[in-house]
Image (tube, rainbow, N blue to C red; front, top):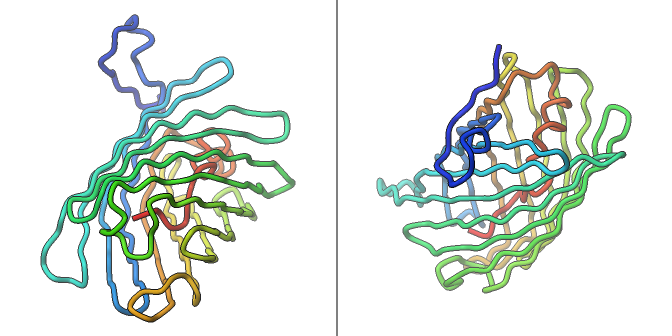
Length: 244
């Protein structure tokens, strides 16, 4: 099967405007804070990747809706991101810049850098970054500047399975996360990610955060999940909890 391709508008020769790969993710993110806020997200993310001799570039765009406490209102959210990455002798490195907008909250500019190390049947990674919120008063518990550091270990027991565990430290506190990926077809997988803490930030006098995210991810055909994650290392700059 040939990889998917799309054409982008640019001022370069036509051959340089054709994305070599396309990926699509659809997900539902159930987010509960302190047992008070039930803030869920339903969204899709589409990315196009261009491969270079050393660095590769992925441009992504997302659109979805939020719901607060099942009120029946679904304010929009959208985002764009630029991700640059490259292979190293013992792993990968990369950086990203993203702009996120939520109709009923604010606009966030996020930058992150990550480094991954390959190990037998596993990959470890660290990520550092920061987000700047246009109006942090609209996002409970966040300051205008929201720095974050993430560590994660992913184990690949089979070609069709991956299990991850990690921790994030940011301006709200510390949370842990567990993740599993299952290969469904030669170009599709299912991902389930859970993050939790009893001591995250003060929300109406309570400390609590419990998020679960599930979705489908489609990309070019791959033999194993480890091969896919090495070819398109989106985990490099992934935060378990975003700024908003």
